[in-house]
Image 1 (tube, rainbow, N blue to C red):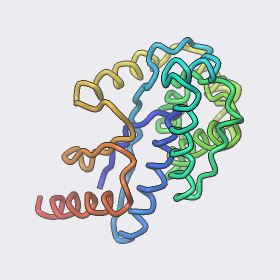
Image 2: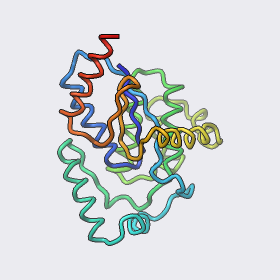
Image 3: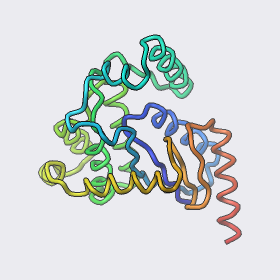
Image 4: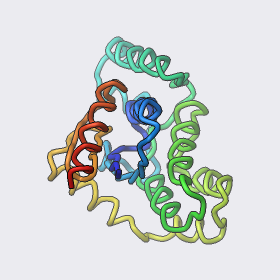
Length: 216
């Protein structure tokens, strides 16, 4: 079974959704699943160097009280899947295009099965737990090299404009498919569901997709 995961690396609900999907899959151990990570840009107009996080949050959500309420709820949801969000460590909201390019580079150059999933996990960890700027190419190279990617090839790629247009085009394509929020999941390119759904909901989607797959 193939699952397209439409996500953004700076989306805390996408980190939660990744964990919930893993929990759903753990309840279906006989399924053989391949993930395809597809880019979605929550902030397509973000400057290349990102912006101050406090300024970003106030512009997006308004009052500090509303920000605290929203991120308090996210923190509680994170605890349910053993994610200890450390939002206080994040000082900048980055442009996420290059982090998506790292995912794409890993998919084409990585030699270890499941390496892309590991790189996505590391991007989430570095941003949401360690508060690092995943819009910084030095941080992205460190993540890639830590997962066995060639440093010089990766740095040359990130310093170029290769696949930048493709990331923006795939974001546009996701919107044209009616996807306006992430995470979203497409099972065998047939069944689409959006939101960081409960593992039981995702498990039912896995069952539906598996049954249809068997019939075909």
